[in-house]
Amino acid sequence: MQENSQIAIDVQNVEKIYKLYNKPSDRMKDAFGMLKNNPPKKHYALSGVSMHIKTGETVGIIGTNGSGKSTILKIITGVLTPSAGEVKVNGRISALLELGAGFNMEYNGIENVYLNGTMMGFSEKEIEEKLPAILEFADIGDYVYQPCKTYSSGMFVRLAFAVAINIEPEILIVDEALSVGDVFFQAKCYHKFEEFKKMGKTIVFVSHDLSSISKYCDRVYLLNKGKLLGEGNPKEMIDAYKRVLVGQYEEAGVEEANLLDDELLQERAAQAALGQNPQALEYGTKQGEIVEFYITDNRGVKSNAIIKNAEFTIHMKVKFHEDIKMPIFAFTIKDVKGVEITGTNSMVEKAYLEGGRVGEVKEITFTQKMTLQGGEYLLSLGLTGYNGDIFEVYHRLYDVINITVVSDKNTVGYYDMNSQITVKDIVES
Image 1 (cartoon, one colour):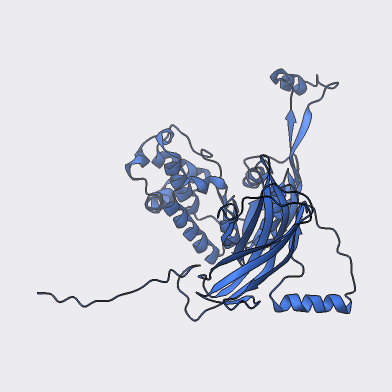
Image 2 (cartoon, helix red, strand yellow):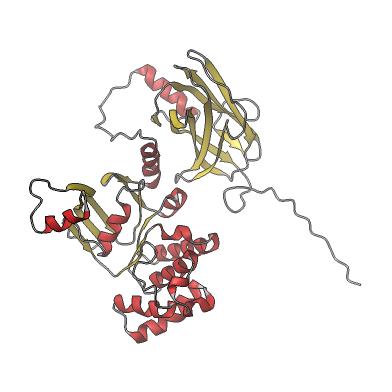
């Protein structure tokens, strides 16, 4: 195990195995060693998972349902014991896991605050001092005096999160629970995340909200079927997660060293001049293929530099290697952190609902006004469709072009609302 004072959470080769019995009575028989000839099946909820989270980091854990995300959080917090491996935690942990964890449903809100505080090692006097801040953050009014079994999921998560963040944790662990709060409470919670980050506290959270993962996390771990597929910056791991979702993830192999000939060097230089990424991530069945792509400005000139509020066009050329009944052409624009900001496709726009035949080549264009703030963005392209009820990815290209938006006026947020402002003098009689 790593002996490093800067490591807040050290997870070494953790496994969590559950035994699956054919019938309930087999569990009792197994306890007495009576199932030697018909042993239960083993299910690996986690298989050899290692994580090293530094003090002050905000780390996300993503993956499909059943990938082991909640299991690893419960092991870190001590709710579950690993079947193998070791976990070391340096610092006081506060955890917000699934609804109900650590709360007595028969107690009212106040009683549960004292219960949780006592479990964390605080005295009654210390909890009493923290109580006003907890109640102010939860903001559930007189419901705090009612039994928790009468709470809505929204009220419950308000109180649970208010307790979790106000007991001065050094490490905050948050599962998907925040997703049940209303949008204003979620904004309040994420503001608290920002405060915690500035204070140098460690945050680990699981979420299906990829924009939050991208915005708040320094690093991300990707789990799938109990195994750790990878760890890295949010953008890389989110792209890999999307490939997992459509069953097209392959672990990266060792890159072969290849010498680039002059022709390839010239090609890459031309791509770079248009903001194109020669090593863009791509995957798909290739029944149809995006064979060319570029951007033109409002003068029709190929360029990746677009003036704010000017019209521009995204071009993609698609070749069909097989018949596709209803192809869907799409684009997405993300910021450099990987947050998807905008995008659309031909099905949403009802622009093309026909099929493509083998050997055909089609040029697709998306024309719109650039209202994003000045800065750097990344363009991704897609060719997908439905084969009956099954969603198919024929070809996707991630981060193929860097778009530079040139602006002399940036407002707040991602978009400029182009507000028209008037100021009038009012003459009072």
